[in-house]
Length: 432
Image (cartoon, rainbow, N blue to C red; front, side, top):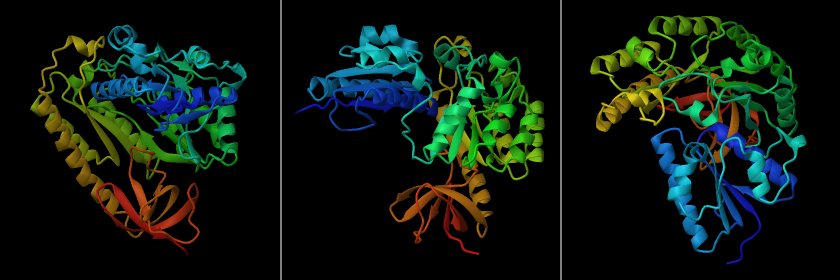
C-alpha cells in the first residue's frame, strides 16, 4: 500500500501531553510537513506521545507502541517514534526490551524530535500550536514540572523541577488562541498556584489572571489543578470579581485522614482542608469544587476509608474523581508495603464513586427548571452536547440539548434544564 509522507501524532494521557503534541504539530506544519492527529490513515511516520504516570496509563502506552510496531512490520508505516512521559522515565528499559522503534525522546526534547522528522526547529514559533481540541476551547500550559514532594507521585521524576513560563509569553499565546477562534482557555500545570515563584520570587497566578481576564473575546478562563497547601486565598477574590473566570475550582485533596495525608507528604491536614473549603465557598458564592481522591494507599484501614467516605458525603463535592493507589518505582511511597489487595482497592473506589453518583444526582436535580449558559462542544446523535462554566471538558458533566434551529457548535446559549440523571443534564433552548 502506498504510504503518504504525512506524520501521525498519537496523544495519550493528560491535557499537558495534548499541548506538547500540539506544539510539535505546529513546528511540523510550519516546515510544510503534513501532520495529522490520532489518525487511522496510513502515514510515513507515527509519533506516540506517551503517559507514564500510573500503571493503567503505562500499560496503554506500551500497548499502543506494540500495536504500531505491528503496523510498521506490515509495511503500512515506515517509522515509529516514542516521546513523552513513559519514554522520559523508562527510556533505557524501553530501548532494551522493545525493538523496531526508531527513536525514544523525553519530555524536553522537542527540538531533537522535530529534527529527526526532517524539519527545522523554529524558535520564533515557540508557543504556536495546531489545536487538536474543538476549535472553541484550548489548553494553555503556564508552567512545567513540579517542586512538590508527594510520596505517591512520579511527576517530578518525569517532568523535573517547576519552571514558570513568562507572563508575556502566556499572554501572547492566549491572544493568538483567541484570534484563532478560541472562546475558552483552560489553564493547566502540575500546580497552578505555584506559578511565578521561580521567575518572580512570589506567587503570581492572581496577577496573571487579571491580565488574561482583560483579553477581548476570551469568554471563559478555567483553572485546572490547584494544590491545596499554601493556597493563595487572595486568588478567590480575583476569580469572583471577573465574570469570564469560571467559578470552578479543581483542587485535588487525595485524602482526609491526617495520618494518610502525612505519609503522602501533602503538607496539609484535615483541619486546614475544611478551613480552605469553607473559604472557597464563602468567597465565591455558587462555586463548583472538583477534587480527586486516592483509595488503597499503603496502610489505609477500613476506619480511614470510612472517614474519607464521611468527608465526601458531608462536603457533597460538585465533581469527584477517584483513583486506586499505584505503587510507583522511585517514589517515596514505594518504600512502603503496598499492602491493600487490589480487589479491596477496587471495591473502595466503587463504593466512593457510588456515593458521589448519588450526590451528583441530587445536585443535578436541583438544576431542573433553571436557565444556564452553556458552550456547545459537539453534536452527538439526537443532541447538541454542551458544558456549563462548572464543567471541564472530558472529565465533568455535560448538558444534552434537544436540536433547535440556529444552534451552532462553538457558541454560547442559554438553555432551560428539563431533566437530569447522575452525570448529565438535559435541556432545551430557552427564549425569554
